Length: 482
Image (cartoon, rainbow, N blue to C red; front, top):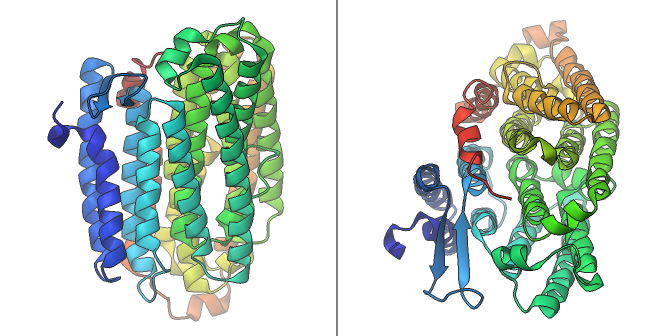
């Protein structure tokens, strides 16, 4: 396809373009460039999804060079879903951030956001292991910069901790890529899927272990989650939403791709390996939920909820014997959580902005002053709990169905327990929000800008509607090959 008409290329070029322009423009034009660029990117992602639905998968060789020398861009249904989620959520968050930062925008916020999105888009479209490393580094460094943009001592400390995690994770991944290249002379994921088999040399097994462990660290799966609560809990609300809804999903996406692609022969030769991420996922659900229940700061509560919800993504790995069901459950969970958690973080940002308190107790009286924001928070909580008819319900239903079909009753039990624990910390916030004192009732309501409330509500509503209109997403995933 001609470069001018190729949505794969434009999904990478557009965010790089507006990020660069935002760097040289004034703060006044930064949000306008971001919004215009993301609208274009969303259209490109929709065009790409339509092409994938028609043809199954599409590819592009940059510069016309064939593999293994050329850079291969590749998209299938899984890529299309991740790209649609990324552009849609990012557009909503940029609209929110424009109003949230109306007084003072953190330095280079729009530029870093553009580079972050460009890195994620490139990651979802890359077809070789080294380019994936480059995209991981771009995403990680941009995310660290956004966390540090808060400017306070706590934010800088959280950013440094995040930087340590991302450098160690990326370093482990890169060392694994070097071992793979030394063994096979290529870093093409598609070629490696044909070359790697169960009799692979020990260096390849070591490479797989290093690369997958590095990605677990970047995904913040328990017990590698130490960096996530301070980073997500201390960053400005739009940044927290970007990190929780999208950034951790990028490294999970790559973990999933490697597991089902180049390393499929290894994991199938040793089926017990699939129990390891599932056991860590179960621990994440229980530990993250318990910490969310105990948290006294609202955004820290939501951050620990992310630790718990990430755990669900790793419960699917022992279940791939059910065919497409486990993959559908995992990607529905990615999508539902991305929408709901973005909504919850920016709703919390509005609650904190109005109340002036970051503590959970600060939401008292929100039912009077911020009913739309509180309703958005509640809808997002419905999806996190897995109540019908939300996208979270459908994802957990498919997960439980796949688990019972494969005889993994413990996975089904963990999924149900996680929903109940999520209910405890969500209803804890809602109960406090409806605690109205005489002072709350008589106080003049503080009204935030409408976009702060309605953006959160739109994202939360989308997480509910996903459960009712999930078939297009499921149909896209039908063409995904292992």
